[in-house]
Image 1 (cartoon, rainbow, N blue to C red):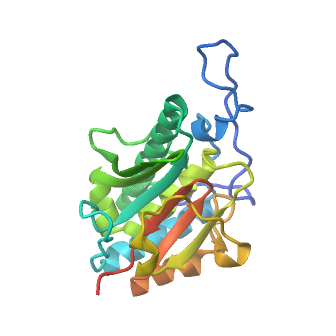
Image 2: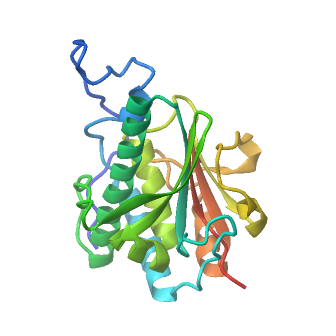
Length: 252
């Protein structure tokens, strides 16, 4: 697959929307809700980054995956990818966050479809339509609001056949479009089945040593963690601010 041209930096700073200040407008990027809204557009990954992600997708597609462990706290959860997030308890703000995370997942699905088809990408694709597939609520707890999401439709197909690739793209999309708590960073680490004994909320605070950096600015550093998860059926999680994306370990 031909790689799109890219700068030395894999992603420049994200351009964020400016919003009107009227009482019925979307909150401005300076508001406390900005990290739940995200940007309307974002600079795309470099050719080197896309090439690495294409290799990950191809390796997982060729190898095929053992069934992933079904977590004990939810018998509805499919074998694949689960997303836990912590949201404020205000309905408006929580709705913004849920919609933005779902949109990021559907955009990641569109990216993986293009990579699987060997098509050249020069920009972030539009998210796939929600009637085609997306995220659904599997578990919720008041606190503020702790929510666990699993997949439906085409996203379930990708989450069961290429769970590590779709989780990686999902986390990068969250990062690129600014859907993280400011300054939180994005980290990836292996997990064991014991991690999933309880719903994956609230999101843990990770020390730098607890995971490898993984972001749209650098897709290279954490690649060994991702490849081992594919080759050996390891569980892996991407911790992105108040969002936690988990691929459970392979079933025994």
